Length: 211
Length: 74
Image (cartoon, rainbow over all chains, first blue to last red; front, side, top):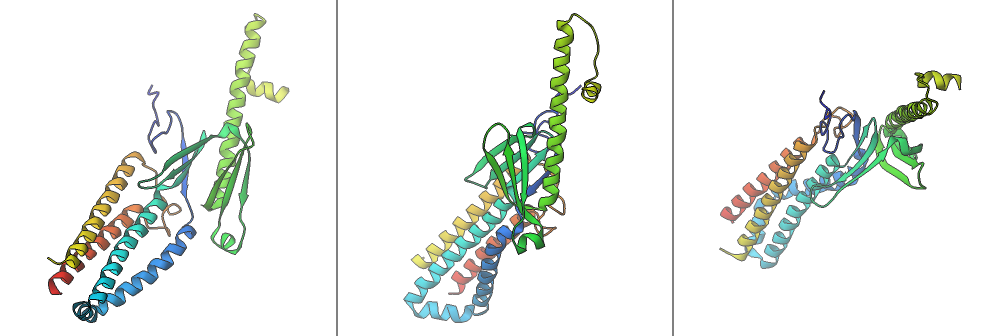
């Protein structure tokens, strides 16, 4: 039997025996501002390309215009690179839901790689927040996870289809916590039966039902 | 070669190098993460990071061609 089944199967860091459920990115609304600015930039760039003959004449004649053109060109270059890096960062910044954990993988292409993992068994409460007109129309929102061990709260911002992911985490949390409860109960019953020197096989589910 | 031309070429070369680095990092990321994409995870339902990387490379290529043409015809 392969004990490493599912290890690193869907993502780096996936544990052996851990089942991947789904993953999500931030909603595209986060990129809306950048897309609007890029559209304006593209419009200006296209106009410049159309009027390139006049620009070349002006660059030939005037030293100041030459410097202005150079600065604009370098800024345009920089902006294009920045915009596309931001787009790619949007794709690699993800949240992952498995049967054991919720993982917040805050990653960028170069500068950031932070992974925050929350065990389903440690989740006390989950909250879904959808506020505002855009959230209602596009179905995105924030998901807050309250941990049982401490006062800490983990928030996932601008989660697309927030209702679905909220239900997904709730279900996985329930399943995980029930599984851990059964495990602990089975262990306890084993200890008790050994202590009383009785060999009696007790079904944990039946024990829960009758007690 | 004038300073103007040199600076334009340096700018485009820097851009090309940066784009290559970004595409390389994206490929490295894809080797570690094999997450199943769906209509809900792609941007606007159909755009993946591979498309974005390809469009990025196309933009940089256009910048290279434009710079070469501009310098030659100036």
